[in-house]
Length: 97
Length: 253
Image 1 (spheres, rainbow over the protein chains, first blue to last red):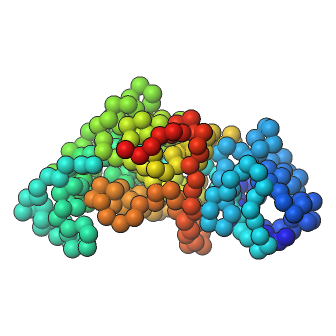
Image 2: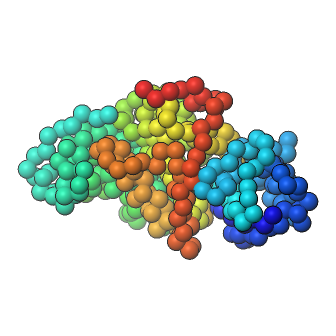
Image 3: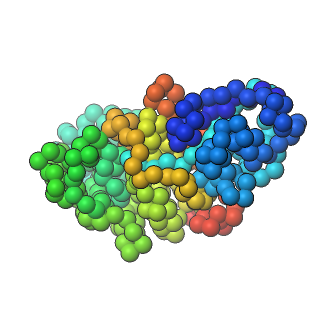
């Protein structure tokens, strides 16, 4: 399944990129996967600092992160409902400036 | 939410052009005049929120921001001026706001929102616009807004990106639903361009005006996200967290 990742704010700053095309087969994910599994697979590619930003110490999506499929916030418990071609956006909490 | 206050002839002249907005009109202007808005803080974001609300004719602004004006404030904090360096931020804000709108009532607190003052600050307001940089302040205002069932416009920015949502306690997700914890790697100092903070501020002020005057559709249960690098804007549908420690079980009045 091919997906487009959109990285925003601190995640974008860390990676130095705002989008990435991914193939879930190449990431070793099955037909169904959770947000935690997706983020863990991405962390294996992007390194420990990314992993620490998007995952908590227990390997679950960080409590300061919203995972959105298309234009809707996704539930992070259980499998993500995604289809080939979908866009997944990671929104990290930001504040006033 | 607010008690309308009749307009004077001078005010009808000043607000003439916005009185032409359909659904707003004199009734909306009277509601703005009767409204009290808490803005925390009055930097790059909150300063512009306060300025727009003062220009629009909100009756009372309650401003909380500690400290004195520093050189590094002046790229974005448009209520601060060069001759105010080293002086109180809220006093600079008060002076500039009253220059724009001498009819405005301004209450200032030269402290940031804290556990010791948040209950009273929120109680004095009809609506809260959260522009604070520290997540501890944001969580306090969110908690108190939910407790007192007051709407809160949550404005945020980073680099050239903005996030905006409106929290209606009992109806929409609150800040703690969305982000139960602050980012672990959060740094107090981060990239800020004044024009981007000001964009988020003008959007937040518009949201507050709509809520007070009772027209349009607020960003309730939705978050506007924008990246001004490529001028892309989207609206994300948000979910409440049933087990939220702040608003779980809270129902709309």
